[in-house]
Image (cartoon, rainbow, N blue to C red; front, side):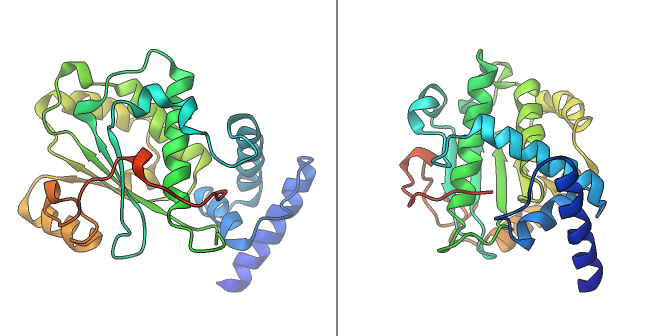
Length: 245
């Protein structure tokens, strides 16, 4: 297994060079995420990697973070929360969808998604980044109304995750799904790849709730969802400066 991985990594690096780029500075765990996301196909993984490099250069400042000031309009809704670590040491990202309204500025919304993801991944880094850090997501749909429905925004979020944060999602729990969200969710699912779908758990019964509590851990899970933690808005979490890949 290790030998086949090393062979795939060597082929990936050569394929990246053919695309006029380089993997210099990126360790095995980072490169493996791209290979896994492309079913260990070095050429496809190389294309994804180079596309990601170009995207990061255009989207994220040299500091490695999109500052709060650039996404303050979205932050003001206080709909995103950063908890954790979970039992497995991963950050828990909570979204209260009842506080969300569809964004008029789609570029700003994309920046906000990236801002949240970068900060969440950075919170998992202990000292030096390994490259395979993951996050757990929790979408809380309790008390949503039609004004909160945003299939486009949901698709955008998952597409950013799939295209530019391969193998960063550990699991995503969806709680309190109401009838009005069923049809939009079916539409969203058309844009999700198989690997992403397999990581999503729609919590509908006591057994799935117990699974959530067991996998996340009561110390990381907010009180609203059966745990012991207090919700902390993303902007209220202070982290040392770090760059996530």
